[in-house]
Image 1: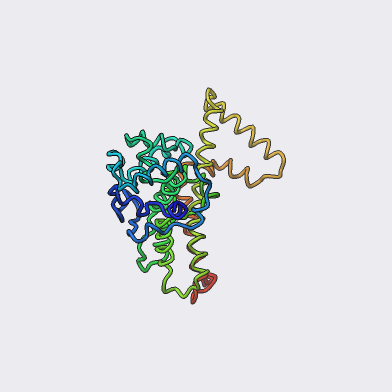
Image 2: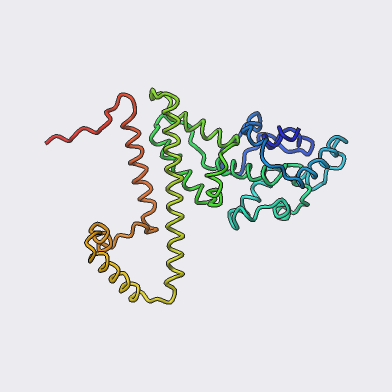
Length: 308
């Protein structure tokens, strides 16, 4: 029983506590009630949480008795409320701060009440990640594939920056829920009518979303680097920092092996400058979309050489 339910959060096992089906999330895409079951089947094989399993058995026993013992607070809770509270905690403190007990405190309920809506911490994390994927909000196809993919990339970048804890799961926890599925469906729909085979269309969408993910990783690295330098240079005057930079430039110039880097530094160009991040993202996105356009059927693979 619970193997199927673990793969499909918000299944009908919670109908007795009055959880609405198909309710729009606070942000992002709206998932139809029929699609709430569309969770990847591999989730059924995740490691069991023994304490969660024990509490779920108590819940199941209550439900078999007709739900006569449903806690009042559990009946008043919604799954969306629990997920949103967990996301807020993760945004403020990181995903390591998530526990069923902690989120129960956030929603002013007992831990047991959460298990009427969410099977375990692992399921809660899946729901949180899928909610964030939904916030990326791939646009409804407008007929302008370039504008739509640009919007998808910008929305993804903005969402990742709002929920940086999600980045920790991108390499080890594949998207597996209905909101991620709907976003992918919309993104693929932006390429309808372009004469692309299915594999190429998928590669294009993955290329755009991978660019957004990589850009955020780079931007987080830059921001962390800025903080690191500020900590190391605490108490150092601007004049002292300028002199240190001048000495460093002199050292690398003396080697004769770094002419481009020397010229870059002497021109006062900071490749990690925070105020240029948006412009750099848009430059890279334009280059990417130009490259995609060059590969679309019926268009030249290279721009024509200007005459004259």
